[in-house]
Image (cartoon, rainbow, N blue to C red):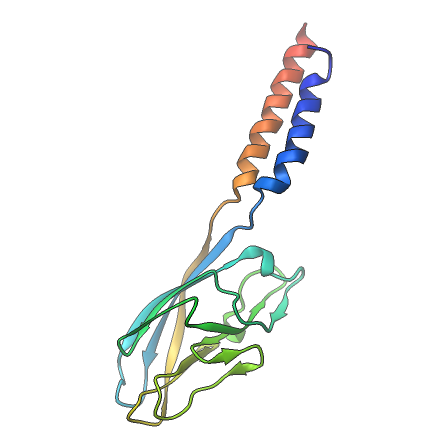
Amino acid sequence: MKKYTWELIAIVSSLALGPVLAQAGVITHEFTVTATSGPLNGTSSTGTFSYNENIIPVGGGRINQTGLFTDFTFIWNGISYDETTANTGSLAFDSSGNLNTLFMLFGDSCSSSGCSVSAFTNEWYVIGSLFQYAIPTSFVFEGIVQVNGPPTSVAEPASLVLLGLGLTGLIGWRRQASF
């Protein structure tokens, strides 16, 4: 092959395949809520929520929007919730792109302007480390929230492909240069 052919193949391939294969990584957090008052006092439940890393504002900041979760699992008072039945009110990120758990807001009756709980319902929400809930036979009660462990991230599939193409280009260039 002509000189620089391998480099050209690697560059063209990465430009052509990169946008097609690139997907944002998914960040997942585990959380635990524990009721500290009311008829469910002492009850705990653990859940998880995930979001795409491409929603994180450059330099940090808050996003007031519903539908930010790509995956959500949580059971409270015998009811299972997923990303279609629980909404985000807002998520906040520090300047490094980490979730600021003091300013997260989500629950089963949220909008982009906030979350609420009405008495005598099965509604609940999380704001920072506070959990509020109601059951059909009672008023609104409180609990605490703990976000467990560091988030886990799923690698971007395109990164490995682009790395492989780059290495292939370097190997081809090295072989070409040695002849």
